[in-house]
Every structure is written in structure tokens, then in C-alpha cells.
Image (cartoon, rainbow, N blue to C red; front, side, top):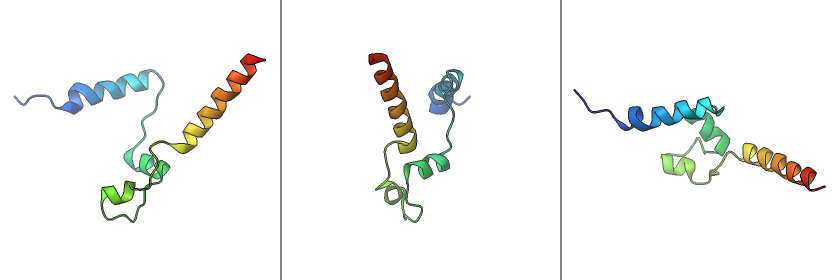
Length: 75
């Protein structure tokens, strides 16, 4: 009987938990597009070289939302 791999013991459980608390799954292709990967790069390193570490659109939106909440609570 083969031993369970990392996906079954760790990743699958984390993904299930994340979905339970309202997070959505983003496919690799969507994540790479949102982070600005270069589709013409020859290697994964080349494609990711100038990419953002984050989903900039989501980070910006969440930062604005949080900033507005702080401003509204402080007045």
C-alpha cells in the first residue's frame, strides 16, 4: 500500500478548510494571469521574473476597504 503524499495529507485539507471559511480556489492559469506572468517566457523562472507576488487588484481593493473602515470608525 503506497504512503499518502503531501497532497492528500496536507494540501487537500488546507484547500477544503479555506473553502469552508469562504476563500475561493484560483487555478494556476488564473493566478499567473492576475500576477502578471509573462506568457512568452521560456522557463517558469522567466515567466515569473517580473510578476507581482500578490494579486494586485485584490490587494488594492482590500486595502481601500480596510482604510475606509478605519477612517469611518475614527470619526
